[in-house]
Length: 163
Image 1: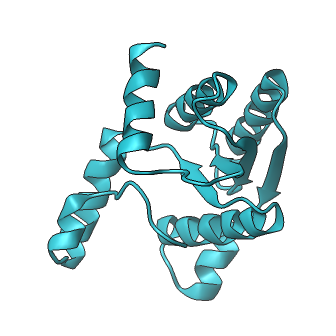
Image 2: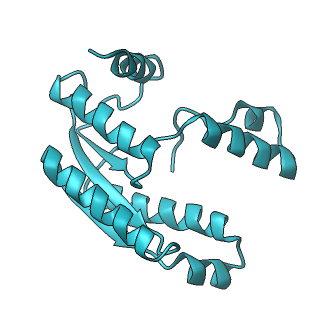
């Protein structure tokens, strides 16, 4: 096992992620962090370190035109190459942002969580896995500091949370 895979397997074990899961929904955006998540989790599953079926979900926010569509195509191609089922959903984040009077970023996060939750329920996935890197964690922490947070918010992105 490669060092990255070992580190992630240990993190999963330490935080009891995916306990009892028969199916795991992997939220794959097409970015480097989620593509790394896809490959590492698929490797852990193929080595039976994770004993769950994997499903791929891609949410196209339609914010970057052809670049958003290219991310969708990349995710579908990669999932197909790995022999994993993939589902894509398109959400109009700009319309959601206007109708709910939210920033585009907040609207995108909410729409993504709603879509992923629906897909997880529909396909009986007990867990949704997302990939994050240190910059995401730092950004989350700074946003929380900016709006005022308690001590729990100072921890950054938690290993797991309930939807």
